[in-house]
Each structure stands twice: as structure tokens, then as C-alpha cells.
Image 1 (spheres, helix red, strand yellow):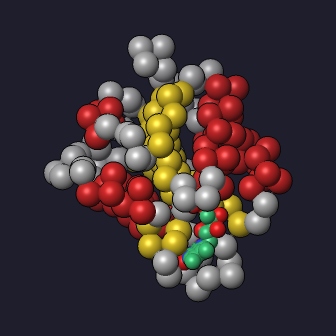
Image 2: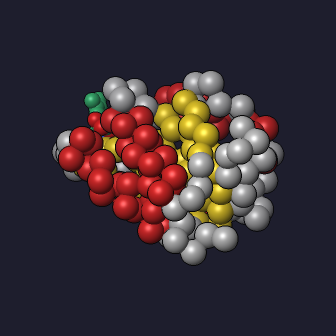
Length: 148
Ligand SMILES: Cc1cc2nc3c(=O)[nH]c(=O)nc-3n(C[C@H](O)[C@H](O)[C@H](O)COP(=O)(O)O)c2cc1C
């Protein structure tokens, strides 16, 4: 962990957001930011305080809800503050549902409420996540372009 500059935590039920997460990691590595990746099921809240840069990946389920592992992870946040931490948000979803990628919107809101700074627009992935891999990789790379 000592060599890592960034942290990425994702919640994924069928693996789509996990695939996006691995491409985000590649995009960050290309930008010179080695990143440790955690599944929300096993993520530790205290780790969120050890990184100045954190990416959060979360899919949307059940009529606009945050993916269940990620939701359970957030239930452990308590009064966590994220002041001074820069964050990027992404997630898989489907426009076939009325609340498209609502989890990404809710997560953005929650992170800002807790003091985090959004690096830029979030990434919402609809369709084949395999096809989206280069797109999300570039998104992550661009987002940290000015990260010192
Ligand atoms: C029962 C069900 C409910 C879903 N609800 C939503 C939704 O409300 N909004 C949305 O954008 N996508 C919704 N989706 C689509 C998933 O977010 C999409 O399949 C995504 O790729 C799953 O990502 P994951 O494998 O990382 O969990 C739903 C899918 C299913 C099967």
C-alpha cells in the first residue's frame, strides 16, 4: 500500500463495475498514479483517510439504489469526513431503467456533503462494459491530468 498514491473502492454485483474499475486503475497507472483496488465487501473505512485521491465505483440496482456491497460499506462510514480528498466517481447502469445510474448521483452528493472535492464529471457506463474499457480508462486518465 505504501507505494500506492490512489485508492479505488468499487461495489459490483455482476462484475460490470469491477471491469470498469480495472480500466480506471490502468488509466491512473498511465498517469503515474499507482492505485490500490478494493472490493467494497472487503474495504476498510480507515483506508479512506490514507489517500489524497480516491475513485469510487458503484452500480445502480433496485429502482435507483446504490449497489448492496457499497451500501453496506457506506453504512460503516459513520461521521467520516473527506475534507481535502479529491475523488472521482463512476458506475455501470442501464438506461432501460428509469433511474439511470442514480447511484453515481447519490454518491457524488454524499461525497461532497462529507467535504470531498470532485475531480470532474463522473462516468456512467451503459452497454457492453468490455467496449467501454478504453473509454473509462481515458476518462480516468484525463480526470487526473492536473493532479499533482
Ligand atoms: C433488477 C435490476 C435492477 C436494475 N436497476 C437499475 C437502475 O435502477 N438504474 C440503472 O441505471 N441500472 C439498473 N440496473 C442495471 C445494472 O446497473 C447494470 O446491469 C450494471 O451493469 C450492473 O453492474 P454491476 O455488475 O457492477 O453491479 C438494474 C439491473 C437489474 C437486473
